[in-house]
Image 1: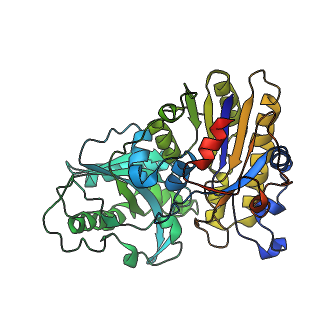
Image 2 (image 1 turned 120 degrees about the horizontal axis):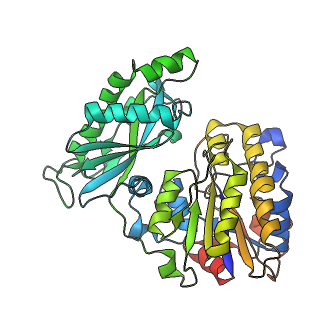
Image 3 (image 1 turned 45 degrees about the vertical axis):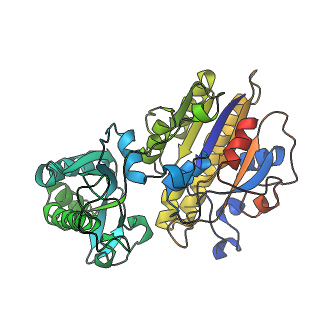
Length: 416
């Protein structure tokens, strides 16, 4: 049996008053997800282990069954792998957003969804003026880039910018972790102390603002009425992780693929031993090319044993607090991804197991991630269904799988 996970990033939500206190999954028209939940079995998955921040890296690694306390190294190293940056011992990688600051507050975490082409110019400019033997900037995708600090100490407190829209940024600058402030001699892989590392990053943030404020890219964006890309915001530091591949965990996965427009997910796929499939028109936004992503997934399933199809759009809509847009992204996932994949594989000679789930909620009310368990279903030909009739956060509470955690979901899915 072949296996495909369809991951609707941030798709889960809270009850919305304007929707008669229903969640968006309850209110959206999702005939295929409801049908597969009805024909399959349903449950909930705790994707954010106790003590971890509800980031997409944490949640997606949990979906794949990784033991986070053992292997988690932050988002930065995963994104480094995705863009071909091979971290050497002692090199600390961080996600480096390009953001928009208005006055003293973070207006948004994406610089108004800056294009990759614009951002590449800015990142190269920052590397030219701020890069040195210790500091390197690398271009990623859209607003998501990479900062590598040689000898940095990862024991620092950083705030994800998407968690603090409209908040003053100065109180959120990087700090050494509690209990490390008194360390005066570098330890372990680092040749900087936590305080020195925090000071270096904060200096880069402030200097980036001076460099970017009058850059031609931003002058052009201003004439177009777009938000300026006027600061960097590094966060989620770590070193190269030690992760076993899915083939190590599940011998039936001889070959697998990951399909995503998000570097973070492709980095997880890299360490999980999945080949990255690049899809034309995959943007990570609401205008992503669902049809090309589905075609890539179906082609991969002809030769591969496992496919991880990740679609980011609903998470971005949640971060914007846009209820109608998030509803549309959920309905698009159903009609343009889940439905076509099910219709294509349902009669294949070799059966295909399908699982659909979010990685975490991104409630429109809150505009950031939360750590509540997420609904999921598993369907494959011949599975004995439970009593659940729809796919949503409330119905999943009655599912026969109950509440799963750690590697219970992936183990159950791969048994099919």
